[in-house]
Length: 133
Image 1 (tube, rainbow, N blue to C red):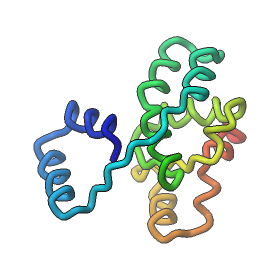
Image 2: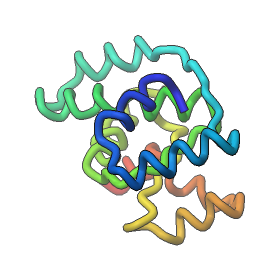
Image 3: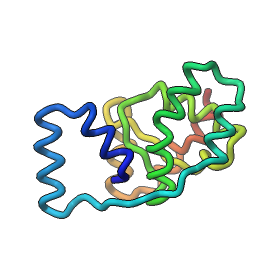
Image 4: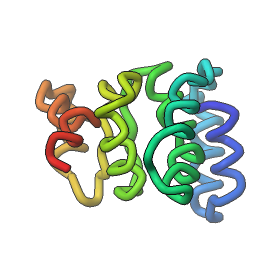
């Protein structure tokens, strides 16, 4: 977990999520990292062809991409809209291409592949998704 992700959790978490997160911290299941800010990717998004609202959504969720790049290049999130935006941008921004992005609700097979270390997970990279868009 990055400091930025922690702030997002604290801002939006439910009572259940707060209890779960604190439990994970107490059991030392949370690793705090400080990823490098992806200023080139941020600038490419800001200068890109997406709408102002789409750029704002991507910049807001870039913290997920930064954390993924600093760890295992995986994002597990429920937001399919921003995933699609990043997939489209990955066609022109190389730093996004290797990110595997899974929504466990809409893609339970992908979530299981991640948990099992299945090589099929590469089919869910932003670069592969951009080919389908």
